[in-house]
Length: 298
Image 1 (tube, helix red, strand yellow):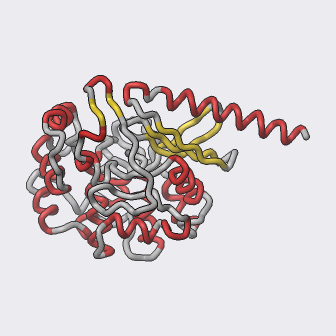
Image 2 (cartoon, one colour; image 1 turned 135 degrees about the horizontal axis):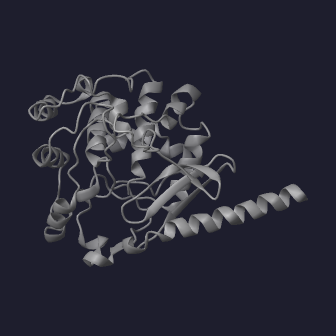
Image 3 (cartoon, one colour; image 1 turned 30 degrees about the vertical axis):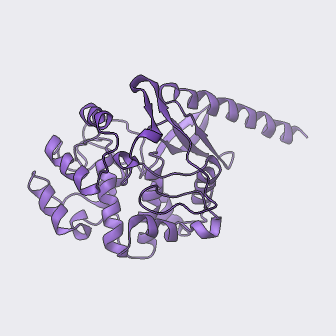
């Protein structure tokens, strides 16, 4: 699920908090020679693209996860993808959309590069670094993991089936790697997802307030798009309450509501019905508002 993008962003900001990188740095400083050569061969100037551009989808990088990709995945459901394959597909399928800050273009490719940056800085697989930097042990996140990349713990709950009726998809029939490296792929429960969100926005993961506040900053692009997207974070509103969070491909979403100091995670297991996320969130926010008003009255 793409809610993982907030996890990746928080990991990058934790590394900045530790003075191991800066989101203002050029991504060329932290990519492998192979990836640098691949992107520069397609005309990307990696000295201009900063880490913050990847996190905010303002890098000018074209995406690979289009209808052609999904159709190929449909016909090759058991293919085990690598991150390098998907980066190569990014270059094969499109050219630079412009310079950084020119346009907002949401693409998983940005976050694939972020996971490579994390690995090159920490010298560990990105998912291991995430666990340590985001304090999984402290918060007892025993159900948050990356299937196929790491073994499942004995106490970890089984994965649910997720469906896409339009394509007759059942997530159990797919190798999860098609949506794994940076863009999605994280498995967790609604409880742990909401707890991660709550702890992140209450300074329990990133202690330095100035560092955390950067996650809320949007980058204005020359195309004039009102993207309402920070660093791995969608900025929205539900029933008059500001929200920060992220949705996911299959029908997942997590939102933090600062005015209520509450995080809510919702999983809809049928992608075709993912509009229900909005209905459930609105109903829960209204219910919480009634409880809040009743408490104030008493």
